[in-house]
Length: 69
Image (tube, rainbow, N blue to C red):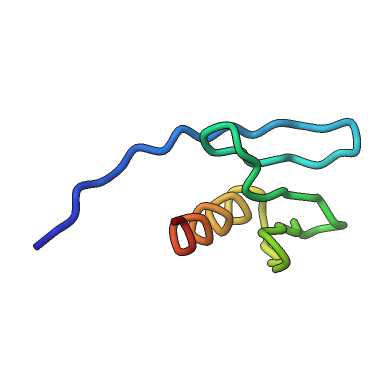
């Protein structure tokens, strides 16, 4: 039996510290920071290193879907 896809409202907010906060339903679930030629994404106490910003955003969404309550 397949599950119905849920639409998630996602917002990326830029901060003065050059970070992008990823918010879902008004709650910050992760942040993306440019680091030389890579992008670091922080989710909880985990850090992921991605090649581009789009991959970092996808990683945060994957972690959110994996651990949502």
